[in-house]
Amino acid sequence: MIGIVDYGLGNLTSVAGAVEKVGHEPVVTADPETLSWAEKLILPGVGAFGDGMANLRDRGLVEPLTNLVHGAGKPLLGICLGFQLIARSSREFGDHEGLGWIDAHVVRLTPDDPGLRVPHVGWNELHQARTCVLFDGVPDDALFYYVHSFHMEVDDDGLVVGRCPYGGPVVAAVQAGTVYAVQFHPEKSQQHGLTLLRNFLDKG
Image (tube, rainbow, N blue to C red; front, side, top):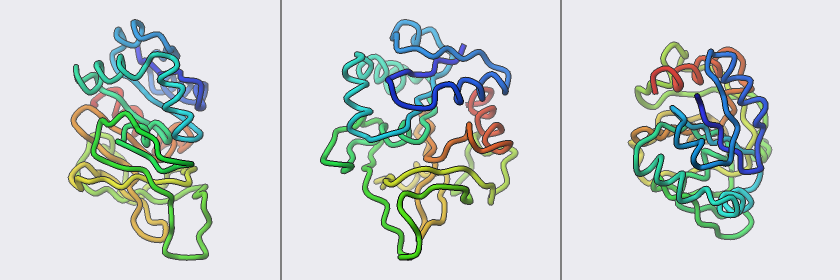
């Protein structure tokens, strides 16, 4: 059983459908006990960082998730907003404290090319920075679907496993032990997205 964390933000139906498509049983839940029984966890999300953290706190999920993932090492895949929430902080509409599972900070996307729009919406390449199980069978220039106005600055470059070009290299994927996270939406990224999701669920 794969636990999809429901904190009131995100395309939960699409993520659950993708999990089913690659042969696993998704359970969408905000119940910490149910999440503790899951083999692996997915933290999806669409929206503002501050709202995401507020919802996690209101549902009593911050401490249980931190104990399960950061403490006990249960594998987790963060997606889009879920990718950003694992950082220490964000400057999106104010200063916000994140889950703090990796030494990183979320700041506004400011492409070097003034012709590039923010938010960054659409298909873009993923360039693999180092070997990661997520990318087994995924070509180095694979296209994934992005929707974001903020991006992650990571203190330890060794945690970065993928970047995308958008007016300069933008961190698109990280791995810290059993914590994996991607800025793009694998559930919206057709075959490469399903391959990445299957890799996490089968091998991560």
